[in-house]
Image (tube, rainbow, N blue to C red; front, side, top):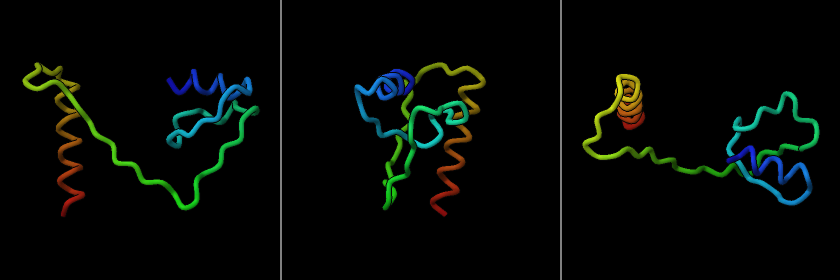
Length: 74
């Protein structure tokens, strides 16, 4: 979705606020990127369907997320 917004901004039809590193700025010469000061801190929520059968990769992802959350609260 950020790609669509990027196209609108490039064509002068919109402005965009986005999370850092969602757009590859290496080849982007048409846009100017500036961080906000003071920086905005936005909590992010991860959601998955309750009682869903997760693939091995999804299980590993959820496990790592849970472990990182436990480490942050210590």
